[in-house]
Structure formats: structure tokens, C-alpha cells
Length: 385
Ligand code: NAD
Image: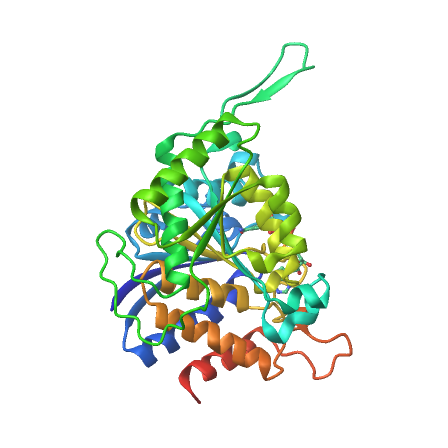
């Protein structure tokens, strides 16, 4: 297939890790016969230094026209003194999310076999397997509702609005993602041809969505539960659906994470639960994310920031960005076999003992590789060399 991918390296370690993800995408294109056209555009503090705007019009236009966007990270101390609305995080990230209509955030949290020791959970819990996808609603709820403080500043409120439409569209993404994770047939995203997906491993358990709410207390949660239940009955009866209160979900994530497959939840609950889930896997340098919505293919980025403390040293772990590229292949292009190949390459390279400093053994043996050496190892694994 042919795809136009916009690369936004951004700040700090962003350019270093995006370069390695681009290498992996090139290796995938060569191996599977695709034509990925990749163009870089400035964003974040780097763009501010160039033209005084962290999200130049040309960058935004390129993102809107792209089939998918891969972002490194933005921000850093150099731009912390800018007015809030001009800072990289707000001007670039929040504007991109709203302009591209990215209403669903997907965060896989998985413990890689070779890195099991890095999880803070007990060995017997990790041994049962941790492979969860959190689907968080990203543009509604308390974060976007009306908020106010009384004149005497002694009381305040944040309204948590949700419509059935907002709930249904993110629930649909969760059900589709659950099917994808288990190799079921999927409907193509609008306007996009989906390639056949040979070789996708079929997981032994049926796809399952756990919808997390607080329906015993909140009216928005009752609407959430009704809407998810109705959509499930109408279109996704092949996917198992369970409902769980958010307090119980927070507890089960550390007590028995193996019970989860896909977790679907609203904005604030998802913010908290996705951070909790990411921590049980052990390393921030390994965790990718996808933001999907009305834009054609979505935006893909590691969950970590620009890591200014290690920028320019060539030691950042590029795997979260490479795994974000795998999410792009799966969710933007429907290329499941290609996404599996990237994830398999990561698994194989880790199993062979190759480590960047953040995931290296404390003894320092074997010695850690650089960012580009890790990228080379993934490229070689993908190329079969
Ligand atoms: P951070 O995620 O950048 O770094 C936290 C710690 O993790 C640091 O010690 C860093 O060295 C380490 N780390 C992060 N990514 C790593 C990698 N790939 N390999 C190895 N180690 C890695 O968080 P922070 O220090 O709080 O934020 C730094 C800047 O990034 C701030 O300006 C912040 O606003 C911005 N930020 C941007 C995004 C984004 O672009 N999406 C997200 C979070 C933070």
C-alpha cells in the first residue's frame, strides 16, 4: 500500500527516537512491499525557535493531509518561560489533538518476556501475563466541561458532560480494537482499504472489553453503561463485555492484571488508570500510544516526554516510538501482519539481550547499546539479516 506519513520529531530526544522509528518503517516497507512516503515537519520548541510558533500552519496542514502522524515529544526547559498558550505542550499537543479530532487514546501496557523483572508486581502475578489495551475517551468529561469558582473562592465545580454520541464513538474503537487483538475480521476505517492479514496469531481467549465507570454514583456513568451495553448488543455480541466500577478496576490492575484485555473508560478515569497500568510494566521507554478520531489515520507517540536530561547523548530508548509505529501500522493502515512483525522484532531483540541504558541490568553486563544501535538491531531483525 501507499501511505503518506508525517514525522514530527519535536524536542529533546524526539529527533533521535523518531529517526529510529523511521528506520523500522522503511524496513517494513521493504519487507512487505509498501510505499511509505515520510516527511518531517517542525513542531514544539524546535518550531518556535524556527518561526515563533510551536505549531506552524504548514505543520498542521501537513498533519491534516497525512494518512498518519508519528510524533517524538515536545517541550523542555528552554521553552518553559513562554506564556502558557504558546508553550509546546499546550500550543502543539492540545491544538493537534483538537484540530485532528482525536477523541480516543489507546495505550497498550504489556510486560515483555525479557523484561519481566522490571515490573514492580510480584513474580507470580507477572507470570500470569500482562497485556492490556486501555482505550481512554480524550475530549469529553470533566476536563472539558464547564468549571467555575465562587466569588469568595471557597467553592468550585467541574461539570462532567458526556453525550451518547461521544460514548458510542469511543466504545466502537474499543470493540474494534478488541477484535483486532484477537485476529477477528474488522471493518476498514472510512476511505481506507484494509490488506489481508495472514499470520496474525489468534489469542486463545475471546476478545473482551471491560467498561469502567462509577455507575453506582454518577449519572454520566449510568449513561456510559447504557450506551456501551446497547452498542455491544447491536454490533459486537462476539466480544465479551463486562462492566466494572473504577475503584475496583484500580485494585484489580495490581491484584490480577491478567484478567484484563481491553479496558474502555472515560477521560479522567482513563488518565489515572492508564498511568497505573503503564507503571506495572516497568519502563517508560517501552510504552507507545495511539490517538484516534475523526482524522484519517490518527497520531502515534511514545508516552514519555522529551527527556531533556538525556537529549543529545544517544542513549534514549527508541522502542516506545518504534512500537508507536507498530500501532500506526495496525490502526491507521490495517496492516496487522506488519505490526506483528515489528512487535516480534522488539521481542526478539530484547530476548537476545540487547538493551538501552534505561532497561539494562544494574550490573551493566552486557553493556548498554546506543539509541541508533537499538534501531539498527530492530531494522536487522525486521530485514531478517
Ligand atoms: P520525560 O518522560 O521526558 O522524562 C522522565 C524520565 O524518563 C527522565 O529521567 C528521562 O530521562 C526518562 N526517559 C523518558 N523517555 C526515555 C527514553 N525514551 N529512554 C530512556 N529514558 C527516558 O518527562 P519529564 O522530564 O517530566 O518531561 C520533560 C519534558 O517533556 C517537559 O517539557 C514536559 O512538558 C514534556 N513532555 C512532553 C510530552 C509529549 O510530548 N507528549 C509528554 C510528557 C512530557
